[in-house]
Image 1: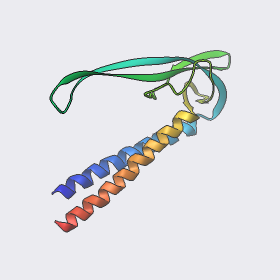
Image 2: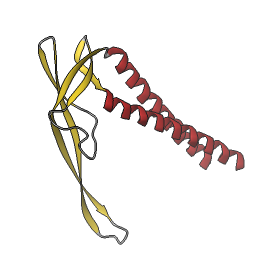
Image 3: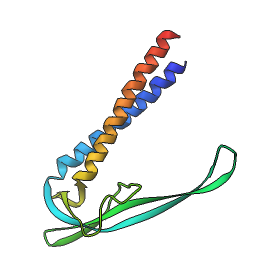
Length: 144
């Protein structure tokens, strides 16, 4: 029965990986125009969580997440967007120029090549781990 749950986990990860890849590919297919924008700001969000160490002692864990805020101009209209991609440390600096690909029919829809590469890697990783788990689950079921 353990093999079944491993296969199920693998199928779920594979599906997530394929969904992420398909979503990113769809974004690339509509964001066909290119412009140069810049990093306006770095938005910091702080998460506080109580944790417990191996001795049962509680402590407060504080984690900062950084989201770049980009601005670009399309047809004389200034657009400012906060990235949905976070990181544990700032990957961009305010004032830094960035190449932005945007959707000419919906200018607020965009991607940054540097961020998009990370999303693709995550989709590949999820799919590869999913396939590996499916293989392991099949091997476990055969040996049961």
